[in-house]
Image (tube, rainbow, N blue to C red; front, side, top):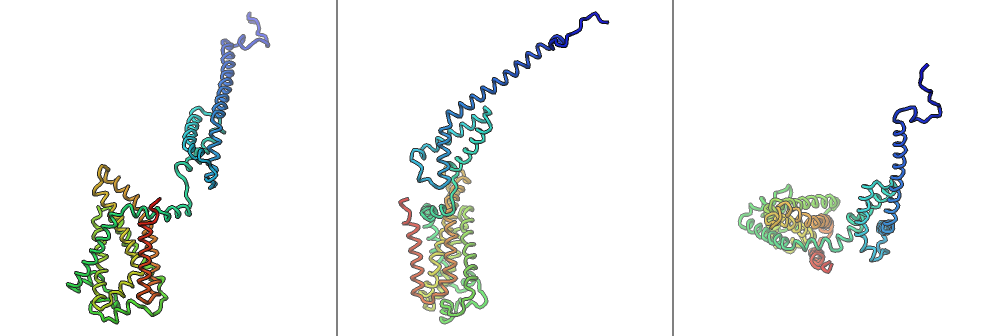
Amino acid sequence: MSDAAPIPASASLSARIPGAARLVSWFAGSGQADIAAAEQAALRSDRFRLEREADWRRLQAIVTRIEAGRIRSISDDDLIALPALYRMLASSLSVARETTLDAATLAYLEGLAQRAWFVVHGPEMGFRGWCARFFGGGWSAAVRSIAPDIVIALALMIGGTVIGWLLVSGNPDWFYALMPAQPGDARVPGASRAALYATLFDHGQRDGLAVFAASLFSNNAQVSILCYALGFAFGVPVLLLLIHNTALLGALLWLYHGQGLTLELVGWLMVHGTTELFAIMLAGASGLHIGRAMAFPGQRAVLDAAAEAGRRTATVMTGVVLMLIVAGLLEGFARQLINATAPRLALGGAMLVWWLVYFFAFGRRR
């Protein structure tokens, strides 16, 4: 039998295990410290929320009204305070993430911050709102911003028409170079007046007018897109493209003028031409604007200058596409359905006046 006295069952752990007293004391102190830390964190979270909750609720009410389209019901003071409230919320969210506040508060702040960001920095605009802004002055203002380039494009188109006339009048063979011959096309040098007159006034079937309009729209769209895209080559190809396309117009004017059908041809062209040629002129001006910005960037980098000019002319080109659609409809339907020169001149002149007033008079106050 051992001489050591037995340890009572009721004896403490420290009497049975060496150092157990220190372990028990450590665990007890650690648990109390964790509880105290949790209580302090909860107090900080409550105090943090109470100090800022009124501003959060105010911001939430503003965002909710804007999302519901009730911006008119928001007071001027709330609209002015919106950016400051959003910045305060972003700061609160940053603090909440760093100090690991309760999950519910953190989730609330993250959701509200996301909604407020779209209101302050990235407002969503519906199609109706975009149309109202675009047609309500955005398109016309963009066109006026490239006015010097429009003047250059107009001068090039007039010069191309004169060049085409002079080339064909000096040598009729130039007509075939400018306007590739098509089977059965009566518009060739030496054609009789009756043959040329028949090409201007169609009294036959019109079943394929819709297909014809779509084909013409596709061709005009390609020319306009080329004018715009080639602007990135410092605008030089745009000059040649505008001159080449209008040289064909000069050749046609020479051909019909020789048979005394100048006014009839002008009426035939004006129905769609005042819209179509205007659209091509705007596309060429947009390309020239980009090329001019790249050739003369000033203190900016070339790519930065091109990007800025591209953003400015993107609105113009959006409108050019719409103009080409209108021109295609006029060319495929109105021109074929109206078989008199006077109504054609009136319609083409009215379209020209409309575009001039819209681009250079409408929306100036805005």
